[in-house]
Length: 410
Image: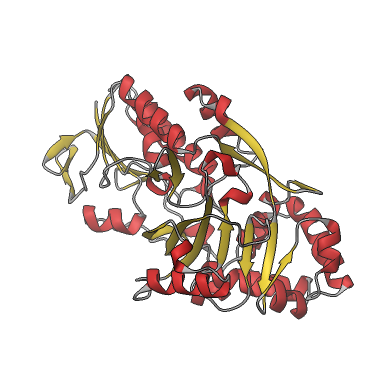
């Protein structure tokens, strides 16, 4: 059987890996290298991701794939510290003492927030799908915690759509980030970067017989007889990992839309740390980015020889004009950095960086099979109500199972 996989992100690569060997698989990828949001820059003698990444101890499918691809020896578990930037001041929020000292919540509010974190893994997430995050926080924690803690996070993550986001997403986000001790979150990273994981995934898929075609954007998917024509080539079936609305447009089909948002992520390098040792600094002050992620306050500085910082910004539709210039100028002004201190900077922009988890989304997610096409990606059930590398691995494996079950004798 001839199978076309559209999109070389994590779900696409995993599905190609699972289908290759017993079937002829062609993977079409518009970029010069596969990886999708796991793409990386080559800077001197090291790789660094275009978008910040880490994994969690509960990512069973991802960790299993690390074993299969023999990259587990690169996996290190590190501590991720957090903080808040408010009125020009950095407030660390990693240790119990730092949290107690935080001046923008009362002691009672801190106790309520701590209790919610402890309870987060016990909530029925499905029951929270119809409730907005704002309503949930106001009803359960009060307006003070919402205004001073959660509203800035929702605004930086979802912008104008923040009031549409479900409590299911919020509680899932809190739960997945609750694996923490006195020193901060326990997070996984691959020594040398996730580029090594993507390269091994691509290599193994090709060894099993898959043909991976970079620089090959899909321009058309059309039903023709009992098969599908993709860019002029005939296939028995197609697995698309593109956003459902993009697949619908290419194929001329009515597939349920999933609300998406874009991401603009600037990566830059400096000689010094500017976030007081904090890995993840959320911005409450208005800025053209919602978080400052100091990668080398997480991964060891000696791996790179320079401090790596990400500036994370989300948008709907098109990114603001001159965003790269405004992000860099604001960062330099706010953190007292002369632009001459910036060794290099890159801006990655993806208009479909991830779904917006609006209320009611759970029932609107497309099936793995729609109109004879197979679909998998960040919009699939394993990535609800919070996307992750692990969810994309599960989705890629699951859609491959569906294809093989549909065509058992092919």
